[in-house]
Amino acid sequence: MAVRDQMVEQPVGDGVRIAQRAMHAAPFYAMAFEQQAAAIEARGDHVVRFNLGEPDFGAPAAVREAMRTVMDGRPTSYTPALGLRELREAIATFYRERHGVRVDPARVVVTSGASSALLLAVASVVDPGSEVIMADPSYPCNRQLVESFGGRVVSVETTVATRFQLDRDLVEGAWTKDTRVVMIASPSNPTGTSIDYDELTAICENARARGAWRLVDEIYLNLADPDENGRPASSVLAVDPDAIVINSFSKYFGMTGWRLGWCVVPEDLVPALERLAMNYFLCASSPAQQAALACFTPETLVECEDRRAEFVARRAIVLAELARIGLPVSVEPDGAFYVYVDVSGTGLGAWEFCERALREANVAITPGKDFATRTAETHVRLSYATSRDELREGLTRLGTFVAALGGGSAVAG
Image (cartoon, rainbow, N blue to C red):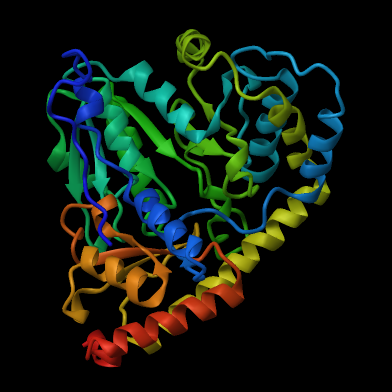
């Protein structure tokens, strides 16, 4: 079994050519390994999936019930391009009550998943030649979006010392006259680590002073650990009200297949996003938007907090088992449901490690190549979004696989 890049270099059909942006878009390797996992299961073998960031809980109970009600045969008409007014108001209220930030509902744009929010945001602020600073490692689709609009990604190598996040010095060192956007994700995919809030504040202040946009992915914010006083993690909007913020119903609310997200943008940017949304996808799913109103009831929020606590418990299982196996986690995560694992001590590169783990142990993991340059062949991303039973089974298989390589627990040294 092998997963390989694919690029069309020759004309197709009657000599017609595929656009360069499509030819040069890199595959999302997490999905490619998922296809291979599905093929193995089609043969009758069970695969433990550590490769996808998809919570196993599904949508909260009240949301599922709300969808059943919405789909009773009543018309499900288009909504405004910016989303249902009631849902935008509910999201704004959530920011106020959960994060202590006042957001005008008029600045909330409901989208067809966070991917569409990222698409709209990048399309609205990136011109050909614009430079966008982002961390290495980071979510791979961000790079593809920037390059699709002619922007240039300035990928900044991060280290264990900065918890695989940008800091003010790294951003300063990458800055040029063409810098247009600084993109940050906190907590991050693939590392599950959050940026130091003082560093985030300094980066935003410096970028704002230089006339650059701050685009902050907070998709996993509500799955971040509370502070030492038990307060929820802070949104960037508390220190930078004009930052562009991306969020989603997929992770904290467990609604991955519903394709519903949102962004909070400066007032002056709203008309541009509205025009783009009209042209790109018209509006997000009307039934999904109506059902999502049930996300913000007290009962649903209690359910989601219980799930966040469950992820913390799963994280502890994963970290303990990886330590037993001898696979180091250089920086422990403090949010999301990922660990970024160093496999260099096994004697295998990350890609071969993932291929062989899937082929020999029926465990699907994502290689670092999806996210990074410097750590592409030394690290893999392991998602603990699956159940405790699946975690234990998969980690047992992984331990057997690593021991058979001849490294066993010694790989940690």
